[in-house]
Image 1 (cartoon, rainbow, N blue to C red):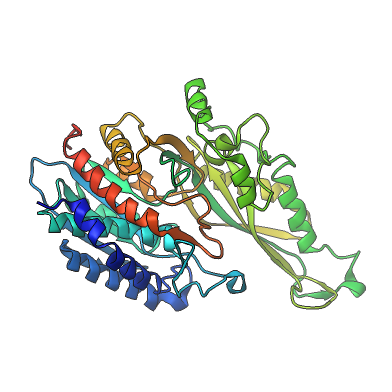
Image 2: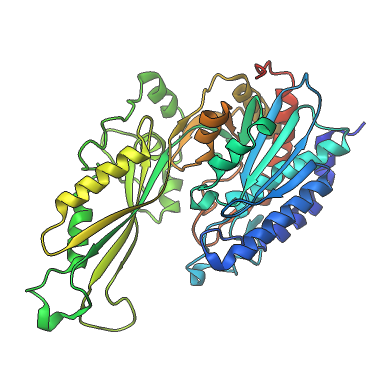
Length: 459
């Protein structure tokens, strides 16, 4: 009798073709003009899930973009797994930096190049294709609940309410999310910690309209200069955040965890290559692995002010705006950080200008229990498919649903990522290795098989 992995291997080419069709849909959740595309991606995904044999597939509306859900039942005595993913993608700009159009999926050097290839359509589809393979082999070994949202890239503003409204049908023993990366194609890893996020706009306003810098410069406060001085006062030259109280709630790293993170085979040279030799900077006293996943950070994500077109225009701008993100670690709270940012900016704003801080979205940091039976089942699944035991590490990104599942539904999460460090998430020429897609699908199948006998405590 053929196994689910046999079916997945025989269906590889067809699965790849389906993924490429999915990637061609420009489901950019942050841009209103793409609302129809996000809806179209949800409907395409629902149709594929139903075709794969998943039961009760629905496209549930929300005040924003829809949630796609479905289920597979193996029996009340079996563990239940909630599978989460997101089908929305980041804006592709700057378009000129792409070697091929971002929504024309292209195969290059063994990888699919497209926006959303690794984040998160390719990894999400590994779970759908795994479900299809399980159904061809007689059904899944565990109960499955699927939740795929269309707003992760804008902070999941409507997910919490949707989860509360559907809590009864989402009861599960463990959740699995594939939206992270492995250390390399030959060294799998399991992320057990994610940083949180506090994202702001800081706007400084001075004159009531743009002025001639010759007629008014030197005697009129310049909002762009004020904003630069505010931003420079929020962080020192080595990356330490200077906002009063910012570190008050940071949970210190214990010696045992620092020892475990020190064993992560992190390729510093590859990291610097991936950043164009800019990598390696940061807070003194911590390794790169610790800075990337276990220490908080502050980054300026965008600056807007004055004349930015070609050539010269001697303008003294009326306003200046910065987009600033802060990655948070346990036990920092986004709302507490937002208030501290507002107080700090207010104290740094001189007379003659006004500053407004707008919180755009946030997420709480998360740390998963490395000793949980589901974590150990995931480790065995990676070893089975990749031939190497995974290492446990932290990651610097944020996945808001991890804390929502814990706080609202009491469900622990396993982060089973199949991306690679150079996949270029959120940047131009994002990619996902075809081999990672195929092996990821097989690893999901192996995980479900391992979980069926892992001794997971039933909820």
